[in-house]
Picture (cartoon, one colour):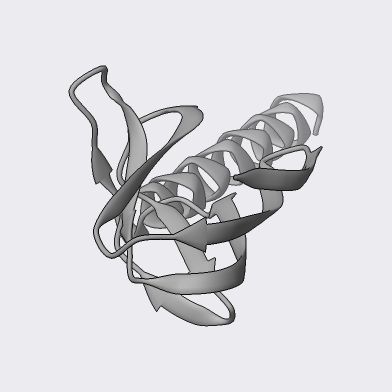
Length: 103
C-alpha cells in the first residue's frame, strides 16, 4: 500500500507498507536515465516498465520511505556547461565587436 505521496517539482516522496519480496512499483514518470531513487536512504536502480514508466523492484519489508528525484546525467551537465560558455562567448564577442567599430 502506498501512503503519504508528496510531489514537489521533480521530487516525489512516499511511504510504502507491507511489501513482499520482488514487488514492482511503477511511478508516474516517463523513464529516462538520470533518476536518483532511494529507499530508506539506500540508493536503488530504477528500470523501464513494460508501459515505459519508471519502476523499481522492492525487497521484502514492512514499511519504507521512497524518494524519487530527477537529477540528470553527466552528459546533460556537460551539455549545459558548454551551452552556457558558448552563450557567454557570443555576448563577449558582440560587445567587443561594437567597441572596435565605435572607436
